[in-house]
Amino acid sequence: MPDDLQVWLAECYPQSVRTAYLILGNRLDAEDAVQESFLRAWKFRDSLSRESSFKPWLYRVVVNTCNSKLRHDIPRREGRVNDVNLVDIATNDDLPGRVALSNDVMCALRDLPVHLRVVVVLRYYADLSERDIAIAIARKQGTVKSRLNEARTRLALHPALRTDASRVPATSKEVNG
Amino acid sequence: MTMIDEDVLINALNDVADTFVVSSEAPDRIVAEAAANEPPRRSHHVPTVISQPSRGRAYLVAAALVAVIASISVPLFRSEGNPNRAVVHGGPPPFGTSAQKLPLGGLKGYSAPLAPRPGSQKGATITASGAATTSRGATSGVTSQKIESNGSIALAVDKGHVGAAFSSLNKLATSDGGFVASTQANAGSPRPDTFSYGTIVLEVPQRNFARLVAQAQRVGRPTSVSTSSNNVTAQYVDLQAHISALVASRRQYLVIMTKATTIDGILAVQSQLDALQSQIEQLQGQLNVLSHETTYGALTITVSEVGHHAHKASPLSGFARAWHDSVKGFFAGFEWLLRLAGPALFAVLTVGGLWGLARYVRRALRRRRI
Image 1: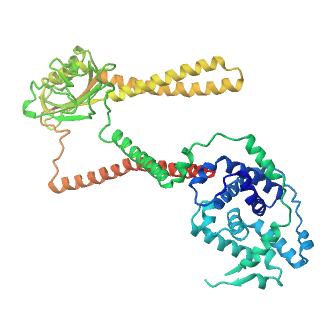
Image 2 (image 1 turned 180 degrees about the horizontal axis):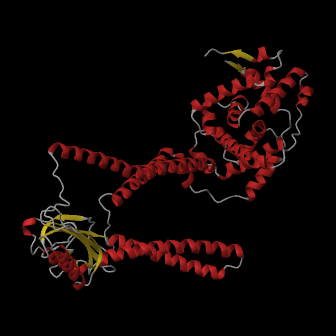
Image 3 (image 1 turned 180 degrees about the vertical axis):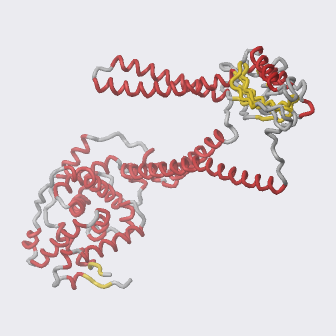
């Protein structure tokens, strides 16, 4: 278990920023949130000794800070311009379809309610298990499962992902029940 | 049900998240800020409470239970069997109205005991001289016992003597320091099948009430006598306390009024003062009524000529009495339900409020945990 802030930052800062970015949809907000999260985590590091795992605990801080920003800070100010351009992906990977899909996924993600967005990001980007997500959002594991299912269903039904007929068959599957 | 594919979602999220370069300076800034604002080591009390949800929940459940029990029991104890609450400063236990039908055979010379309920009030009686006293009244301190008394007597007199009986009763009232509150008389004719009768209401000071009851019975032949007394000391004390509190509030507002500088402030204080004054006058009115009732006892005397049964109630048969008791019981049960509904509603609202508050606090603490 890391006990030094620099170790924490080296291990978790980049992924935390990207996770916060996916939740908040803005890089500057994400950096603010993660900075605040690490400071709070460091301040309350005593409570970590009673936690089973460091990573869910840290994500819990990040998620709470993001929720707080979404609830209080962001609605009260003019929107920040997102300076990230997804077209940059094309420079690394010359697949225009992939860029478009990512754009659509991001668009659909933003339209998800926050509680669903958080579990999707934690599961499919931060790669937390359902148990760890339950710890991170302080809910039961069953709640996490149902939220994930609902989020995936909503994403599949989102207009941005449905209209592109060429990709939909590849991105969706039929699940009975 | 259609769901988005997990692999596609993972790839897309990774693509989106990797579109920018994470600043390498930010961690250094965080370290510097953390070092500058190094807080004192966090005490354990907040996380401890939160990290043991069952313990916190137990506290909340215990608090809710206490609130429920208190909210149900207190109003019930206050309302049920306690219409007249005990006197402050260790006064006697609660007591209610008592009504006593006197035995007809012993009406003459009967000294009406006016103890509200034997055994429930220690020693509050009307003595032979008629003065309302209490063995504990002096020790109760602030307020002596306040007892309101009233009674009714039905007298039968010989034909043609109703007027004389009224005159005698009038004299009795004035000689006892009281007065005639009202009279109502119906004069009959000399024919043998018509009768004269009437009702007179006398009010005398409480201390002379028992004597008046005894004297009034000598005016004619009493056919029924009933007296009742009700201890309203608690109600009296309550009213006095309310008025005192309101007067103190009014005094405070008057002080505030002298310090108010803006028109809005003055108007606001004036509004409060008006409301207070209204309440004080209302309560003072109630107190005056109560004071009058406890100062004077009212005795209603019905005088009728022999052979006239103006108020004779027909005895109920067994079936009718059972029906009467049944209806009475039904309404008593309904009253009980109504009485219980208020505290129950209060309990439900209290529990709901506590539950909401606990939920809010729990969420807030969970957020603060980190």
